Amino acid sequence: MKQPIAGYHQDDEQHWVAKLACGHYQHVRHQPPWINRPWVVSREGRTGALGSTLDCKKCDSGFPPDRSP
Image (tube, rainbow, N blue to C red; front, side, top):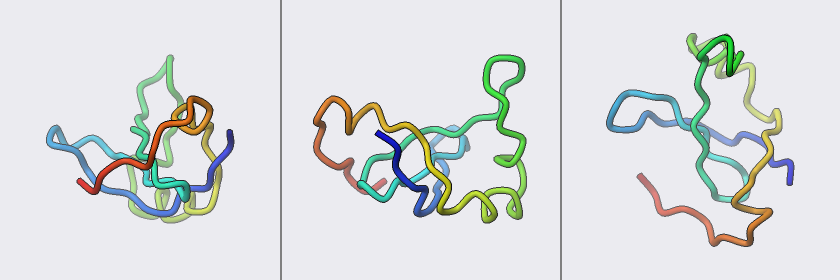
């Protein structure tokens, strides 16, 4: 299910994690050639991606919202 990005935080390893509008969290990494998300590496890129959608597999599986980091 597509969900909009509502915000970000970094995990313990300093990887960026998107907070989705549904309350789930999802890592957003730029790791070419497997994952191509160059917008993740800059503040401007992350800000520009707010509101864009990601496929939330946790919603598809019926999981409750994630707990705050």
